[in-house]
Amino acid sequence: MPADSAPQSSLRANFFSCLIAGAALFYTLISGTVGPILKHNFVLATQHRPEAFTELYFDSTLQAPLPTSAPAGQKRSFSFHITNHENRRFHYVYHATALEDGRVTPIVTGSVSLDEGASTDITVPFTLTAPNTQAMVTVELEQPAQFISFRSES
Image 1 (cartoon, rainbow, N blue to C red):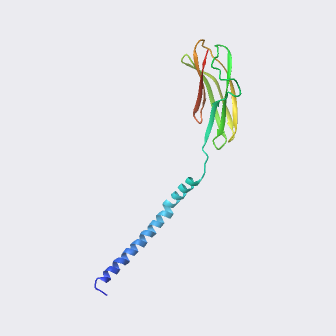
Image 2: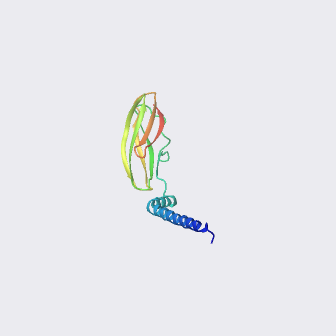
Image 3: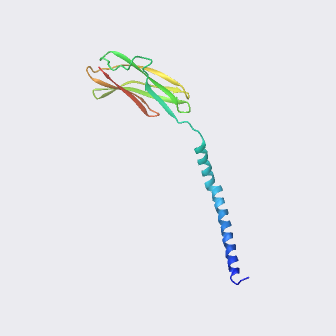
């Protein structure tokens, strides 16, 4: 055996013992700290989770087209539709308002609870007060925050 072979085998032994220690440390880190995170991310990436959303729109099938003409002092009405796709029972609070001549006038505030997949149509009577003006009628949901609007002339 050559004279320099003993230091090489000692060097190899140190290298392999460091490699084994490093692998053991890596395994400990992965299994104790990073492993649960990787598992959680894998579960999130492979699970199918339907998107949660709410449908809110004016329903012109229940009634003639939206009242784009509403003479001042005459009662008109409109309908809007809510469908729950929030993946759970959801409680909706809604507000209907009319913006006339720079003033916001409340029309109605209400609420409805809907099971997942359920829907409802809500009919709202309203009366514009200012003659010969354009009004913006708005229905707003508090949560999820969304709104729809239409214009009406008095």
